[in-house]
Picture 1 (spheres, rainbow, N blue to C red):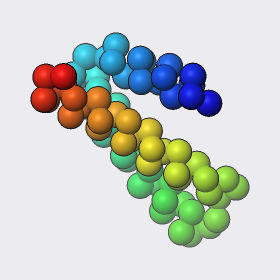
Picture 2 (cartoon, one colour):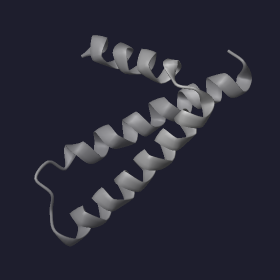
Picture 3 (cartoon, rainbow, N blue to C red):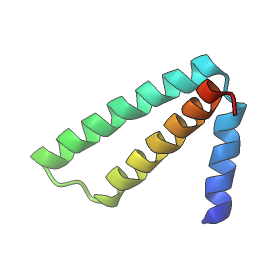
Length: 70
């Protein structure tokens, strides 16, 4: 599992700033839709919400690193 996280982090580092911002906004919209869907009718795998939140956090972490110049 650690290798999968590292692979995702490497994938996010390869994106340019515009693509990174677009991916963040797309994932946030997807999370909102999934949360709403889950509130109306329980989804099959509620842990997918948790993984989406973590993915958004990883993306925002990369965005913040770039803003700080790290």
